[in-house]
Image (spheres, one colour):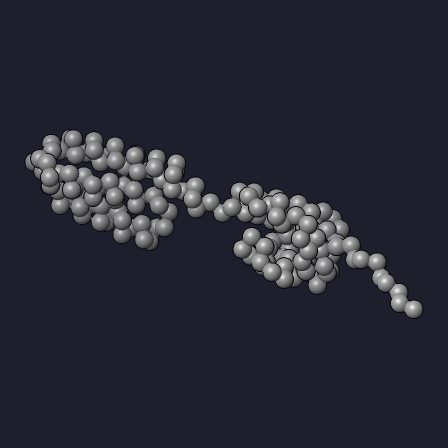
Length: 158
């Protein structure tokens, strides 16, 4: 009969945590941490095997819930979430890659706007040229919708 020892949980936890380094999905990390916790608990307290497995399942579920509820929201890209979109509207930049209705372009700002000097952009159908000055009229997800910037009227000196 196979007996689950505390070091079995520790090895399982180590393997799952190391696997996370290669997967980078945060899928196995929480199960690995839960296995390490069960290893520590089973070293401190003599727990029956079925209780060790149940504790590992409970801690795994708890760690995943904590990840999705509290930790993951901290890593959300605020520009993609729409936070700061109102800051970008009205800013002017220069087209570095020409957008069309079916192709994404690139706009460059002279100073960083919400942490970036270059942004992906689209147009509403107006023809744009490389190097043209444009203004941001809308933010959709992580892309800016731009329109040609109106130049100030020319001043004639006499």
